[in-house]
Every structure is written in structure tokens, then in C-alpha cells.
Amino acid sequence: MSSGKTVLLIGGIDAHLERFAALGVKVVLFQHPDKITAYQARTADVLLVVDYTDWDVVLPFAETARRLYGADAVVSLTEPGLNPASRLGDLFGLTDGRRHEVSRRMRDKLLMRRHLAEHGQPVPHVAPVEGRASLERFGDRAGYPFIVKPVSTTAGFGLLRAESPQDLDRVWARVRELDGGRTDRGSRMFTVDGFMMESFVDGPEFSVEALSFAGRHVVVAVTEKLTADEHFAELGHAVPARLAGVEQELLTGAVEEFLTVMGVTDGPSHTEIRLSSRGPVVIESHNRLAGGSIVDLVETAYGIDMVGYGAAWPLGLIEPLTAPPVPKAAAVMRALVREPGVVTSVSGVDEVRSRPDVLAAQVSVRPGDTVRPLRDNWDRLGSVVVTAADTDAAEALCERLVRSEIRIDVEPAAVPAAVRAA
Image (cartoon, rainbow, N blue to C red; front, side, top):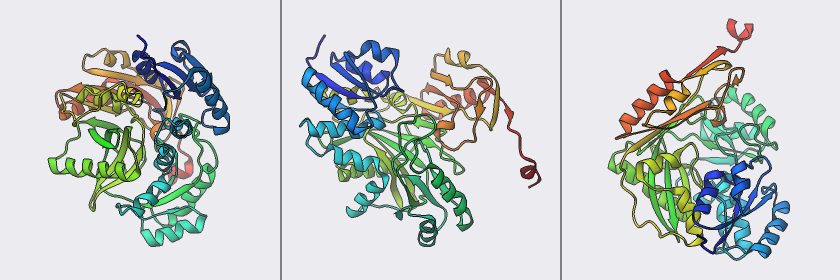
């Protein structure tokens, strides 16, 4: 049944296209050549295979598509499509004219910090990386450890932690290696276009998943994160987060204020925040859906389809949420990780996947594949997602399945003699 609406959809995954198709929306899909799937080729009403991250490439295609098919909205629910989609929406008069400005400062972490500081929001010490000496100056001012990261990549790619003045040669070498290139794992759609520094923020990390409706923000869930200081890979997520009422209010209040200050008015957002010794501090935020199975955890625990809202709201095909939902269950994701080496065997995945309390189980490596040292999300080997009556029970189940039921045997990487001697 047709809704009579047409969307220009910039990038995305099969699930995004599924929601628009279910709404009866005509979809003109702009998809990157590296990301097209058979489902998308079958389902899109019009498919344009272009590098939509290149503005000079995507603009004439979008103008032609709008002239031929019309457009009630330009939407992207995926990171590399956010800026081109918001820019096109502004250009075509389908938004308030400020969406690209907002999207750009959400994606550019240095712009985000500067904007927050200008509006009196709590921010750590921050500065751009401008040569090796800038690292030393920042360490003298902000102290150690401090964080060095690309201004606009995702999934923890390129993040570094400078532990001491003696660590700066290593950090600077990695900055020089990555700067100006493309992300080299998981996706090559992001350009590393500069680095920034910020002081380390202590405390446990959470993410806040929200939906915004004409400037009104509704927090759907607070996600508890499992992280480690020695790397930047997220090892797991739990929904609902195990928080005292006052802590929950601190986090949700801080994120609602943050979204307002940043100018976010509509659609989904995913904000990473630490409950530090100085209070809540936003680490970074995205005007899109969360990754890492979080949208599945949220739907299981709260019954809210955030992908569906992200698709329907820009077209006026759904009523806004009036209040935060109440959890009806819990859900947990745990990543599969192993020590570096070469995979020799994988087993147990089908057995785990067949359990009624398992929502998903997947392994991305096969015998013969190399396991890299764990640095960011691209180095994870798979994940298991489960549900249970409460978060404690879901976490215990997921930990057991990840540690005992799925086997990924790895032949350890050879250790150089000099390292063994040290």
C-alpha cells in the first residue's frame, strides 16, 4: 500500500530500506559501490550506485532524481551519509535550512567541543594536533594520560592514549601514518582529516539513545558499556543500564541539554557519555542510530523500533513519542575477542544461535584468518546478543555463551626474540 511519499535515501543497510518499504514509500537509494547488496538491488524503486561521500558526484545525481521522481525528504541513518543527506535537504528546501550545519558539527568532534564551550557546557581540555610539539604542549597543560583521535571517524578507529611524555613518539608516528588516508578496516568510506587532543575523562561510560521530535527530545534508553583502558574497542552493551535513579537523571538530563545546545531537532541520536568524578561529560555524539546491535537491544528491552522512527518521522508517517518507554525485559551484547594469532577452528555458533534466548550470534573469522591486536571495534571477531528478564541475568548468560559455548581456537602469533627477552 503506497503512502504517496518519496524519499532520497543516502546509503544505509538492508534494515533501513526494509522500514521504508514497509511504509509504502518510494525509495530512491543512493548507495556506495562497496556497500550494495542483493536485497537493496531488488527492493529499491530506483538504485543509483555512486560514491555519495563525494559532494561533486552526488549533487547532480540527486538534482536529477528529485526532478524525475520528486522528494518528500532526504534521509540517511548511517554515518557517512549524514552530511550529504542534510546538505541536500537544506538545498532542496525540505528542512529548516540548518541541518547541514548541525550535522557537520556533530560529526566533527573538534567543532563539537568548541561549540559546547562557547555555550557554557562542560568540556575537557581540547586542541588540534598541529605537529609533534603540539603534543608536548598539550601534555604540559592538560596532564597525562590524554586522548588523541581523528576529528571525524567512527568505531574507535585511530584513537590513541598518550600515557606520558615518553609515549609521544609512538603517538606522533601513528598520527602521521593515518592522517590524510582512508580508514583501513571495516569500511574505507571515511577520510582521516586531522587529529585532535583532549584530556582524559574518568568514570564509567554509557550511551544514551534518543529520538527528537521538532526540538523535543525523548530518551528511549541508557546503554551500559563494557570497555577497557588498554584499547578502544567496545566489548559489550547492556540495556537497560544498571543505574541508580539519580545517576539516570544526571545522564539523561545532560544529553537532553547537549542535543538542544547542538541544535539537534529531529530524528535518532546516539550520545556517548561518561559519568565522571566532575559529573556527566559527553565524549561524542551522532545524529544517527547506534551501532553494535544497540538498536536491537533497545527494541527487545523497550519495544521501540528506532529504525522505524528514523524512517517514518521525516515523512510525517508516525506519531511522536510522548514519554520515555518503560523496560519490559533486558538485552545484552558481548563481543567475541581473542589474543592475536591465526584462527585454527571455529565451533559452537549454530548451537548458540538456535537457543530461544539468543537474538543473534555471529563470527566474522574462519580458519586461516589473522586475529589482530585489539585496538578498536573493527578488531572484534563477532558477537552474541541475548535477552533475559533483567540485565544481571542477561549479562551472566551472554558471558557464559561467549566464553564457553563458542570456540574460536587461535594459534598464538610468534613473539620476536627481542620481545621475549624483554
